[in-house]
Length: 211
Image (tube, rainbow, N blue to C red; front, side, top):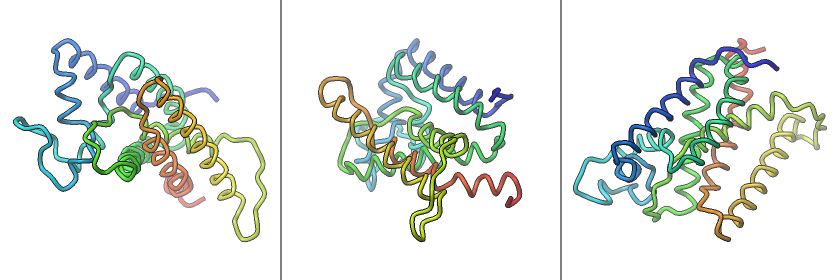
């Protein structure tokens, strides 16, 4: 499928790049990560590392989605975002895509918090939001036929299989990360993906008037 104009996804990617460059040039990257990243331990407390101004905790799932820790981190996320996001925004529309990205960011942050509510390590990156896009992309463009299992309709069976496969991949990445390949917020990926699976059909109905 040929990707059409996708102003929202393109604008989001551009904002991430501009912010990354500005923070790198000015030397405020680490400070921004601490003060605008998603830190589970901030739930229920105002500050983790005073003095200084922190982004309100409720907004950090969004601000964290614009921050990246290095060139490889942002490059990988942007490749996936632009490839999948541009193809999804055409059928979904910008409004539904925005809902999907925000829901993925918050669902990813929630799953990350549940995996370690006392963690003081900032979580950053667009992975939760992108995982939501990947889930919807997989549901819409998958050509595999899935049969219903008892009372479970076929579209839910396919979603459950996709969720199981995605969780399995993320667990493998987590094991690889513990072996020295870097720290990966695997549960943020899982949370964003599950949010995408749950929102796919409602967003399509919203976009196409219930058809």
